[in-house]
Image (cartoon, rainbow, N blue to C red; front, top):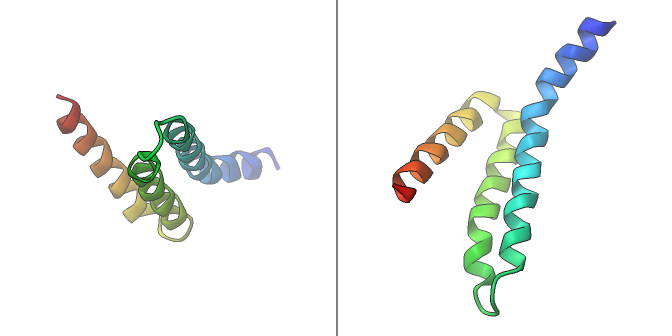
Amino acid sequence: MAGQIFRFLIFLMPRLMGLVFVVFLSKYAITSPEGELIINLIPAVVALCVAVLSWKWPLPAGALYIFGAICYIMLVK
């Protein structure tokens, strides 16, 4: 029984963390100045699309998360 719960949490945790990340990005987009809301919501919408994809196809979505992290590192550098 405990093994099934652990396996379910391992299965569910990356998807929930993706949704938490979307909420985090949206929070900062909403606090942006007037007129910049749509531009600042684009990363949240992209992250939401990847989070939704991760429910059906976890491996490609994981690759997209890694690709997004690499792009972010190159952008911030």
